[in-house]
Image 1: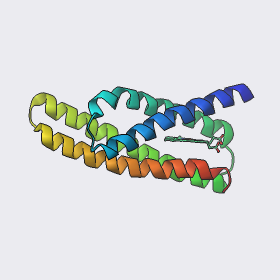
Image 2: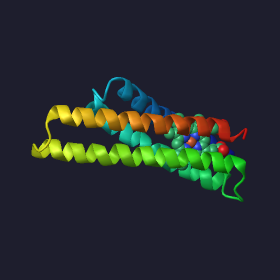
Image 3: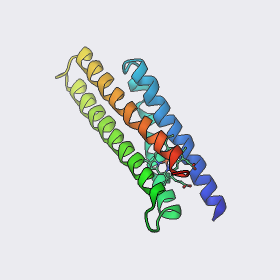
Image 4: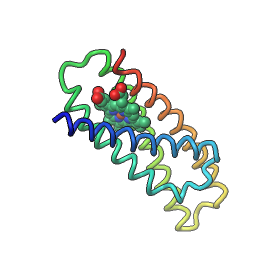
Length: 134
Ligand code: HEM
């Protein structure tokens, strides 16, 4: 059980670092390079959410205290970041493929979305790190 928890937490932190770190880098680059990072970041986000969901039910499934409230804020921000990134990314990709959105407009939109997601994921990382000591 302890081994499974250690593996799940390690995978969770590793995937979370890829997702949040990739988003921070893209925000700094104004969204440039987004298409090349889309697949690894989507995979990392999915692994982060699945392992996080497992950790929640395995470690924090009981009565919610302060740590759970702090974690919940972080989780809400991460889910919002995912919806914003995946939703805008899919819509932009679709419009670019159909030729209904100019390249420059797509890049400007994704730059804005990535900055918003980076802010949300920064809150997530702080909440995840602080929850244990809250
Ligand atoms: C929907 C997304 C997420 C969910 C459901 C989630 C859930 C959780 C849960 C339940 C824990 C507590 C584990 C424990 O007490 O042993 C945790 C810890 C942690 N999470 Fe997340 N998390 C998410 C996103 C992220 C992201 C994006 C990062 C970015 C790096 C992250 C980094 C961490 C870290 C570093 C810890 C370890 C904290 C510690 O053990 O002191 N999480 N997460």
